Length: 390
Image 1 (cartoon, rainbow, N blue to C red):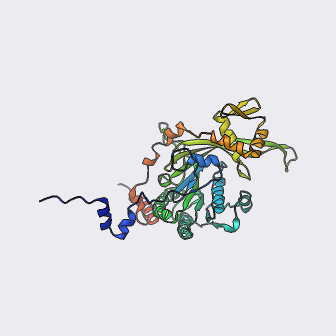
Image 2 (spheres, rainbow, N blue to C red):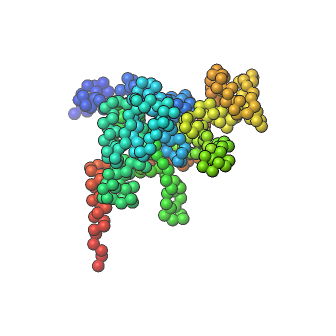
């Protein structure tokens, strides 16, 4: 008996039901990724635009982004900035404030239109998950969640789990929620962005060679995120001032330099890193960020307090002092663009070594099934009620 002739792809496609056809990706007609600019050329370039050519992109719509790192390192500022850019593009921005720390005046200083900003303050994890799912009906450009650490399960408030159980339950809830919400993000073309904190890892023994710190919320967020940006706080610049309390000389912080690294990037090149300059109360300072990167990579030559930039065989500028350099670039857009064209975002080899195996670690698939809260509590209670051996 002759073997059946194999179907061609076109014949196979015709035999499928409508539901199955929708599951088959047509690469020729597939829509390219839409990006929301971050408000920072540096940050856009670290993420890329998906072409692997070093062109700036932004937060990818239809995907999950995690911004994590040190406290006061600009995580919330970055989310606010992306929300502002989404509004400028005519899109809807949603802020899910689990921390209950939203400050309208600060948001306004960063340029957010509060009349067109949807702000939610959920009571607990499950409440927030439902609000996020329902918000997708608006097809927002971005839903920004601040923060993962504050996404406390309802069972903790009800006393069903203690603080130790809260951490495990939150991780399992996050795993289930992300698996559920991912397909809806694609349909609504929405970027779901989380801010997250780092917490110290308690070593079980002196031979434990694992990481010293990790982001909260379990392993699922690392797995489902298309982009993970690590913010490492650097130098804080302070200026002389007079204390309002003591009347004595004091120093007020005015800005901070943050090292940003894409420790995971499924959109473009991973492990790209660069300095990001943030002014307190104002947000990203693009000019200072580019000056910092240009000096670090040798594009701007520094000799004492003198800064110069060579455009080919021609000296484009030579100034004394950073303030004068900032003023020069701010007043000459063409010169600023020329300098930017010469910049290269480099790879962080240390980050590649530290995070290269991260995608291989995720929660068991069994944790994604059923009612997670009930299963977790049932398992925990059964352990406490086990009879002791005679």
